[in-house]
Amino acid sequence: MIVKLSIAALVLLICTLSLFFSSSGTSNVQSNYRSEIRLEELWSNADSGGWRPSSAPRTNWPPPPSKSNGYLRVRCNGGLNQQRSAISNAVLAARIMNATLVLPELDANSFWHDDSGFHGIYDVEHFIKTLRYDVKIVESIPENEKSGKKKKIKAFQLRPPRDAPISWYTTEALKKMKEHGAIYLTPFSHRLAEEIDNPEYQRLRCRVNYHALRFKPHIMKLSQSIVDKLRAQGPYMSIHLRFEMDMLAFAGCFDIFTPEEQKILKKYRQENFAPKRLVYNERRAIGKCPLTPEEVGLILRALGFDNSTRIYLAAGELFGGERFMKPFRSLFPRLENHSSIEHSEELVENTRGLAGSAVDYMVCLLSDIFMPTYDGPSNFANNLLGHRLYYGFRTTIRPDRKALAPIFIDRENGRTVGFEEAVRKVMLKTNFGEPHKRVSPESFYTNSWPECFCQTSAANPADKCPPNDILNILSDELEKAATDTNSTIS
Image (cartoon, rainbow, N blue to C red; front, side, top):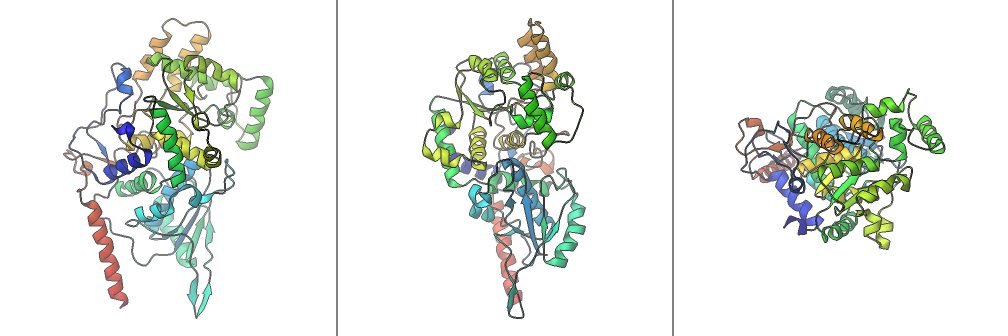
């Protein structure tokens, strides 16, 4: 039944359930890997072990005070998903400092060269309304009226340390905010520590990332059209094929390319990354190279997927072109992307820059299976893994590149006997979307378990789901705070 729902209806349903709904299941997180891989199970959601997504507060969570300490401006740099994490961090920083958050700025000089801004990508009204119990948000810093004259508040610019602790925000940043009335944090990518020993703060991040940040209606509509066309022919898998120039240059994986292509990659690396000694064979042997399209196809075949599998590709321009895609296409001919499915002018108009990445994000989020091919430094893959975990433990296939590398190297050297069995043994030891303990370097945005999940009959009180009427409780507290403020003023 769920596959027949539109994206808008499905997202609304999941948001409502995951933020405020409690389930009856009870179990601890799974610690054992699968004993075998059953294809029919992969096409269903992973086993939740009795856990449900829930990012609602579980302890006392007062509404934002009527008087804040000042205004917080941030500039979120990077691509769509790096910005998404930065927005979540900005909301948390505003809560920590009791600041009024100015609608975050999205870097126009990012990889996409996209100046559409927050208004062009996200539903601003929904964003502000969803977070009304957490922080005050304004679209711009208002003018300050003093002695009958209006004057703009100039924000004091600060560069936060990378992965700054909460103490930096409550001391240095807060001090400048109180001095100047507003601060401007730039750049604001990875500027707040991910691992924070405060579950309520982590749940706020989940409320931002999985509830407040909703794409604009035209992006949702286009995504829905693509998903509907894919669903018309049954379930589908989505793959983030990260075989692109920037990632290959970053990884230092050059030797499989022609001399001319290697020059291009090396030049890009010199211009964009710090110097580092990189030896292809060494990098390949420890799984630091992105999987080639052919390797992706071979993994899927080893898992039992055949050439009837419908695959949606989320990728930029593949480096090396068709000669790398041809082996993959021969294994899986039913390959699609947003351009091959939807041919309208609306698609061309609405998939430029960040909007195109947003459409790919939604189509991958709603796919039956998602497979990232290079999830280490990829914000797109990492955020999707976390989002799919939160939206009902949706199946993911996460290749262990380090464990698979010697198997592929053996195959290239002619040792093909037992290849598929060896691949399956490696994949049996990976996670397919079940709840699992977060271990460094896994990001909180990739895995928000257990902070943003709950159980109705939990053995640990900290894991118990909040009451079903939590929304009413928060609303009453907000109304009471407003009444108290009005009484004080009068």
